[in-house]
Length: 418
Ligand SMILES: Nc1nc2c(c(=O)[nH]1)N[C@H]1C(S)=C(S)[C@@H](COP(=O)(O)OP(=O)(O)OC[C@H]3O[C@@H](n4cnc5c(N)ncnc54)[C@H](O)[C@@H]3O)O[C@H]1N2
Ligand code: MOO
Image (cartoon, rainbow, N blue to C red; front, top):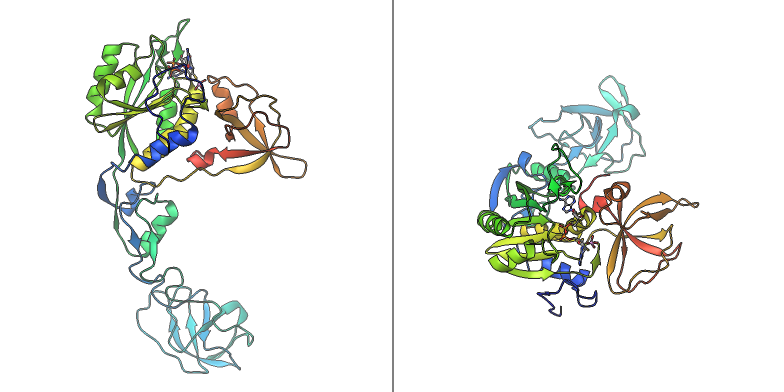
């Protein structure tokens, strides 16, 4: 990418600011994993990032086995067959049947040598010691082959994969009791602003309750993080600087909200400049213009705008990708669905990317239509609550007509359940 960094002017035009793509490239392309590695039992690693590749150490299943309770035989059957052996799941002996013989067998039990097919017991007739099976059963029916789930030596998971519940089943099926995973990132969060108040305290005119910190707590909860909550910091330059300096020594990441632009009382950016390096500030994205990124020593600093909607959107678009890379994961673009707009916007400023709060409803033909929260204000939490995703409008777009295709990014793609 062309390097346009360290932009110093709060009143840059959108053309001068970093674009969404440049911002993302800096946050995902120039960062690397800082989280350490620990070996943990399976029960403790769901949601963590893997620290090394996983290759299947053996076949799963290990042996050919029956998928049903019934009778195993060598297809095709030609008539009634004597039942030579009985094999239950967990039976460790090996069995063999001759052509024309059957084995009584149960779900999961190893297939006897000489058999390739199993008839379900509901479809069989037993008379004395003999069983009659359907004569048209296909060879291999109801038999599960060794290695049919995963063959030995197959690469299964790459280091940096995020472990999902179904991966736990796979790892256990290989007999692996514990796995090397990335440690949780140590993330310190704080809110900045003299007007901010802790919920539970009496409020006066001019004050607002701090809604960003509980929101950021919850958003961080969608990733493997260990959170240190530093509370609310007033607009006091010295206190902000000393707090950031102290916390940077013991954390991988500091995540702040508020005080991110260059008002007289916005001290966060000054503190980063005094203590470390600012790599990014001011982006051509709405909401989120004053988003910032820097470092103090080895600690990464991510500064979110104070407006709750901007803080939320920037967390999803930029903080989440950065934490993924720092935590040892692989950044993947969020899922984007092209859907028809159920609204029109006659004018949109060119040169910046916008993310609108939206949701989907079925249209007259049953296909989803995107709806947009009517008001734009970056302080309106109600719009975030009504939304189930973001409508992305790229830099070149200057208007949106009803029925035009727009990109919809569901919140579920960012780890937020509906
Ligand atoms: N002259 C300019 N003014 C502003 C600009 C600009 O470029 N030039 N940018 C605007 C944009 S865009 C945003 S976004 C905001 C963000 O600025 P800050 O990050 O410095 O945020 P604050 O000024 O501290 O707060 C903005 C707004 O959000 C409320 N807030 C802050 N923290 C919280 C919190 N934890 N919980 C709830 N609400 C919070 C705060 O009270 C303000 O109303 O700046 C624009 N101004
Ligand atoms: O863009 Mo600010 O980021 O108006 O909320």
